[in-house]
Length: 95
Image 1 (cartoon, rainbow, N blue to C red):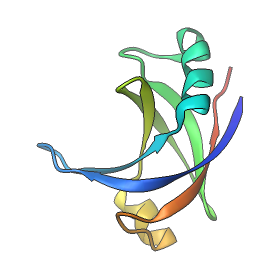
Image 2 (image 1 turned 45 degrees about the vertical axis):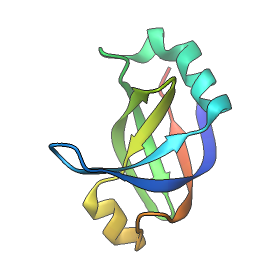
Image 3 (image 1 turned 90 degrees about the vertical axis):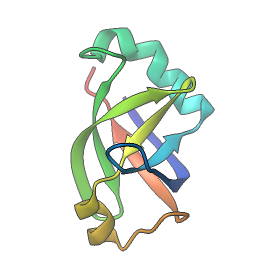
């Protein structure tokens, strides 16, 4: 399953700060429909993600009925990304 969407980078302060982009409604619904086949627990979905020229493996987190993509510091640095940037994200879920 391949998905592509745009979203805004946001910051979660939490006990361990992270940067995320939220998967919109329709692609999140597609992910939810296949989650039972691919999750490894707690609703986490392993994916290959791409932003710009940077590709990496990560896991999507379920949050408030949608999914969120964590964006590590090395990804943000490689693509010169900041909080509030609107980015195009490509996800591949191995079914």
